[in-house]
Image (tube, rainbow, N blue to C red; front, top):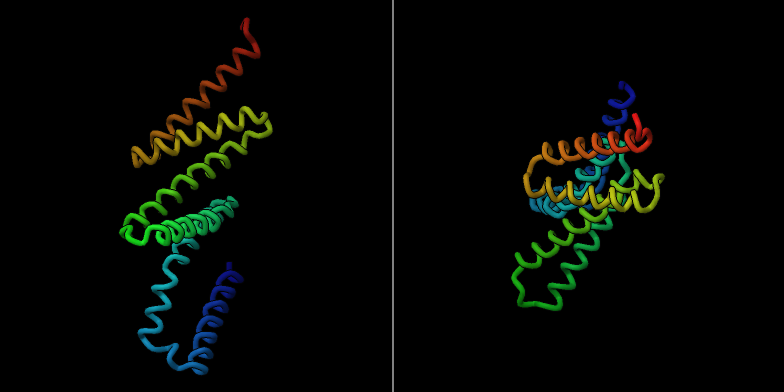
Amino acid sequence: MKALKQREALLALSIVALTLLVGLRAPVFLTVPSLANLLTDSTLLIMLALAQMLVIVTRGVDLSVASNLALSGMAAALLASRNPDLPLIVVVLAATLLGLVLGLILSSLMFGMGHLYQGVGIALGTALSGAALALLYLRRRSAIEPIAAHAISDVFAVLAATFLAHPHG
């Protein structure tokens, strides 16, 4: 724990030193408008990093976040360039919807990958189940229903496997 705090302190000092060095080389860098632009321009990357951090902290590995962002951003740029009269809010909503759909598909496939050892059919079925649970979460805005549905599904699966393995008691 002490080593972690030392690394964090060293990282903070490195950032401050680098900022000061850049400020010495180009004094305009340390002005309030420049720093405000830096923070404003970094907002999207900060949000992406926070989302990725949640995946990593839960010991998951999901490298699709950056790909999803890039594809959604490219789709928004293409939509805006081909339809210059389209209001910005429509372009942003279209990109957000595309990101949501891609995220749903990718997370459902990753949910199903945990069952790949049981065969491709089971993995695809589990992926569809994951998509249904994700849609339930999005509709209800609560994790309770998907968790309950998953638990009920698991109970039925265990009961079915038990009765199929020992049909006569």
